[in-house]
Amino acid sequence: MNHVILNINVLDLGISPVAWQLSGLPKTAVTTGDYFAEIGRIAERGTLDAFFLADNPAIREDPLVRPGGRALEPTAILATVAAATSRIGLIGTLSTTFNDPVELAARFLSLDQLSGGRAAWNAVTTYNPAAGGNFGLAANPDRASRYRRADEFVDVVLALWRAAIDGREIGHHGEFFDVRGRLPLDGSTQGHPLIVQAGGSPQGRDLAGRTANAVFTAEWTLPAGLEHYEQVKQVAVRHGRPRGDVAILPGLITVIGSTEAEAAERYRTARELQGIEQELGILGTQLARDLRGYPVDEPFPQEVLADLDDPNAFTASLGFRESLVRAIRDRLADRPGYTLRDTVLEFGAGGHRRIIGTPEQVADTIEEWFRAGAADGFNLMPDAFPSGLEIFVDEVVPILRRRGLFRHEYAETTLRERYGVGPAQARTAA
Ligand SMILES: Cc1cc2nc3c(=O)[nH]c(=O)nc-3n(C[C@H](O)[C@H](O)[C@H](O)COP(=O)(O)O)c2cc1C
Image (cartoon, rainbow, N blue to C red; front, side, top):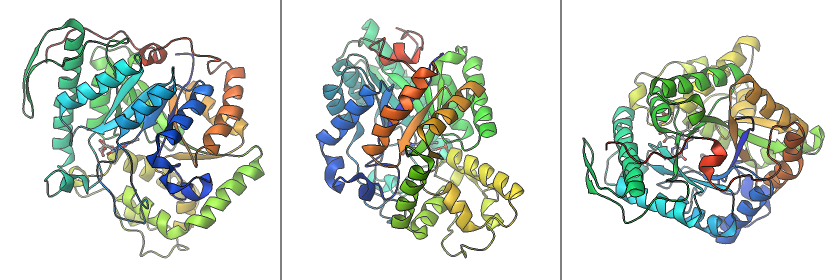
């Protein structure tokens, strides 16, 4: 790929915990089709690769983590965006722990048909501890069993999609699923939807390298990004896949101003609204430690970075935790006296690398990671919609185009062609 891949991750009204106060829109905008359709149209104006949605299968009643936490079901939103746009890709996250593969395969292949071959499914195993309760479980299953199910789930979905192309029936008998038959659907313009994966544990990397066309990752530093990039590509190669068949897309939080002062002011406004307590809650959840009792102006409590007693029992994302621990350790090594407050200011809220700066500086970061081989592109997370996306489209995209890093117009219609991954295979054993 000689072009950077840029998806827009549409998280509520923005990734900032106070996005609803920054956006100028009512909180209820996220329950309207008009809101998502408009975001889709702005992203398409900027020739972005795809519109991306997270999965939230249960409410999280911790107001310190994300107040409200309500979200419409992703494929319903994507069908709305499909109707309002004609080129942009449509990526929806749905859990392998709390869905059925036949139903999910039908839903995404339907979306793929409706959108003319623009759909992709982002497979996750779910970290929200409340999700299990919604589905009759006392807690979320541990990571190892979630990923065993995820491996089989993805295989069944792919087998059903491939069978839709050649019209045969599948016969699958596994640990979690028994499926005999086929979907009442044919293949789509792009054959079938792409697979995306998010989850950075060793099991997550294996699943991605084996099956995914793109991976959404959380990487804070360039060295860590380079390492993770290579790990996933190596897994793909071990499975006989070309390196280019799996794109690595770290998350990038953007706070953009036309000048450095404007960007800093935009960030300062958000910080004044959100307060440190909420950010301590979010950072603590990602580290699997409660940070709220610690004095914020004392040196950072190193003990919270210690290895987990049982990583398998930690249901949140290891990928998020490991990249954060590594980045904070790096910082503590070169900044003695670095406090908990400093840590929250630098790493709080969002779980992803954040850039606060001018369009030029944002473009520099994207170019640096892309050219270094740490990213094939990014999942962009503006602080607040729609302004954070508009400034990206109007001011960052033209810079990337001038540098030869981004398309001037869409050359292709399907997401498969755009991501440059091979054609859909018609047949594999289930
Ligand atoms: C970048 C990234 C994004 C993720 N997005 C979601 C999501 O939208 N919904 C969700 O339930 N889980 C999400 N997950 C976590 C997955 O549920 C993941 O399968 C599980 O927590 C295990 O993650 P791990 O492999 O990093 O340990 C995400 C994980 C990462 C690293």
